[in-house]
Length: 379
Image (tube, rainbow, N blue to C red):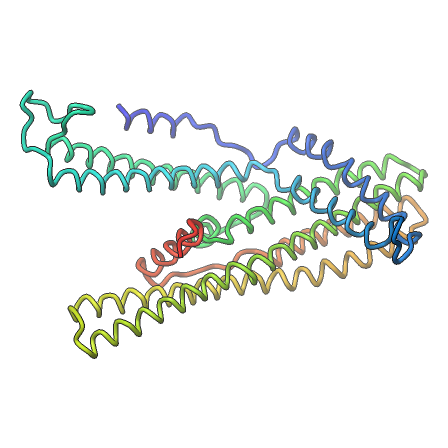
């Protein structure tokens, strides 16, 4: 019965589009006031004193601008992309629960009776026989198979949804996005670019409708400048995470594995225990080291790409800010936003995920174990 319920949920699950017109409409409604307030702060920035004790100064205003940019970034993160990611995470959690159940059933099976006095394999809250636990284990294993099939199906829908917004990914890239500690960040960055581009297109339309109203056109272009600030802030946040958190954790796991290898070698040298077990431990820790090295390589590659993109984005932000202060014609604003839209596309392409090839299933499995170790906060 459970099996068919799970299958039914797969068949009748409605695929979710990455973004709809309603989503963008809501996003524009929520984000517009934040962008507008940021432009107001930008407009008064140059007139403020560099430092003031009893009144607002440039430093205070800059902090207010940064707070609004951070608020805008959080808004642009909102997307139906998260539905796919969350669904996979939920299924993975259910698999972990069933695996824990299997381990528990196997432990209880050791002391369980061969037969029940009432002739039943399983009496809830009273007694379960060896056969009853066998059936529980089989049921749990079947659930795991179905959950894994669900994960494959969700990932396929996710890949199709990405393709609809111009992103083609290989199976290995998809595994990295879902299975690495930076995967959520990479997905969210792509979401932000997509939503920012949609916002920029709306601003372009408003500018065109403003006609010769230069004040309104300049205001819209100011919001476009803020979008660049959001992009740079997002890139800097990602780099900080990778270089200040993700890579140090992988280096820590790598060092711990090396320490374990040294201890095992010392045990073999001094004949402190079963040589076969110690040699097996050395092999396992070497695999952990190899997986950690691959992980660090991937993370560094991702950070390097974002470093390059950030440098370009900061240059574009400088030009856009300077242009905002000197713009004199509304039709020039429309042209500049069009150029900016092309630049957003270029930034996305610069940060496309690398293709990753695992040498074997064991290395891939160890890679995923490191991901789970980080996410669970295990030492």
